[in-house]
Image (tube, rainbow, N blue to C red; front, top):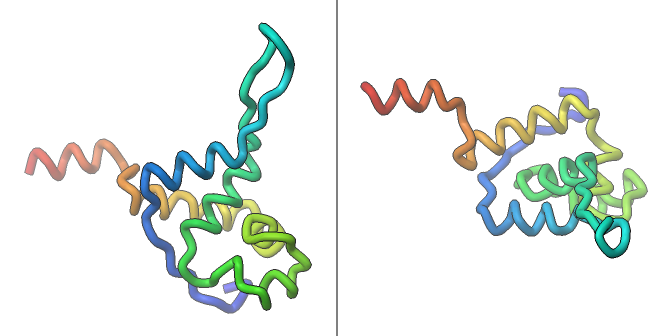
Length: 109
């Protein structure tokens, strides 16, 4: 409601999720102290950009409106943290990460 647009989302494949995670992972330290660190905020923005069919956060007009460098940056500038969380929750449900108890009940019936 706040942005005056209707959101349409799609499911993400395993490969898309893996690419998003890789895109947001940095290697820190050296030698035996080397570890992978995921930037959770950036991962959330990248996932929303991939989940959303409409609006297209990679649209040149939308990027210009928010002064964003890319679609993930645009998500971070256009949406509030709670809005990002709601879109991710809905997208994960579409992608098969629904309520396990509800799924178990469906299987039993």
